[in-house]
Length: 389
Image (tube, rainbow, N blue to C red; front, side, top):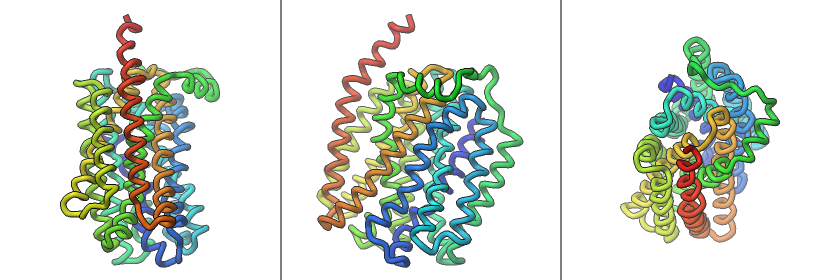
C-alpha cells in the first residue's frame, strides 16, 4: 500500500510540475514579463495547496481507496487541455494551470492513508518514504524540455495523461484502506473547525510553509534563477533543478527516520539552521562551482529532511481521526509557502536586477522558524508524555 501510494503521489506531482521547466521557453515565446512567468508557474502551486484542505478532510471520510483514483483521474483533464490547445496564450496557460493544481492535492490523500497502515513509532519513516513521491517533479524537470525539443509541445502532456490514466485504473483495482481505519462521523465543516482549533495544526503549518514551501519555490523557480542569474541554458538549468529535487526527495525519508529516533524537534532545528546558512551564502551570488552548488544542495537536503520531520510531528501529535484534516491544512500552508517566493523573486529581480534581497528574506524566515521550533514547538512536544500519562 505504501508503494502504491508513493507511486500515485509521484505521478500526480509529475503532472503538477509540468509547466515549471517550460517557464523560460514560454516567457521567450509569448513575450512574458518576469512577474507573468512567475505567476504562470505559481498558479498550480496555490490551487494544489488550497485544494488539500477539503481533499484531506474528504480522505478522512472516504479513504484513500476512493480519493486516490478520483484525484488522479481529475488531473488528466487539465493535462490534456494544456497539451492540446491551452499553451498558446498566457490566459489559456493560467486557466489550465489553475486546474492542474488538482494534482497537488494528492499529498493530502496519501498522508492519512499511509499513516493508518503503520504504528506511531514507524510513521515518521513511512510518511517520509511516501513524501519521496515529490520526486515526480524531477521526472518533469528531466523529461519535459527534452520531449518538447524532440517532438513538440504536446508530447510531455500526452505521455503524462497516459500515465495518470494507467495509475487511476491500478489504484481503483488494488488500493485498500487500513483495517480498523477511524472514520469520522461529523459533517465536513464541523471537522474542519475542530482541526483549526488544534495547536499542532498551526505549529506544523508554520514550519511546513518554510520547509516544503522552500522546496516548492526552488523547484518551480530554480530554472529561471539559474538561467537569469548565471546565464545557463534552459536544459542545463532544468537538469540542475532536477538534481536539487532528487537530493531533497532522498532526504525526506531520512528526515522522517531520524525524527522517529531523535525526535522531530531536533531534526527540524538542524534543517532550519542549514537553510539559514545556505540562504545567507547564496545571497552573495557566489560562483556556481563549487560554492553555489554546495549551498543549493545543502538547502535541498535540509528542506527535504525538514519536510519529513514536520509530518513526523503531525503523526506524533494529531488525533488519529483528524490526520487527514490536519494534513490538508498543513499541506496547504506548505504549498502557499511555495507560491509567494517565486512572485517575490521575480518582482525583486525586476526592481533591483538581483536576487540577493529574496535570499536574505529566506534567511530571515528560516531564523524565525528556528526560534519558534526551539521554543513553542519544543514545549508542545515535551508536554505530550505527561498529557498521555
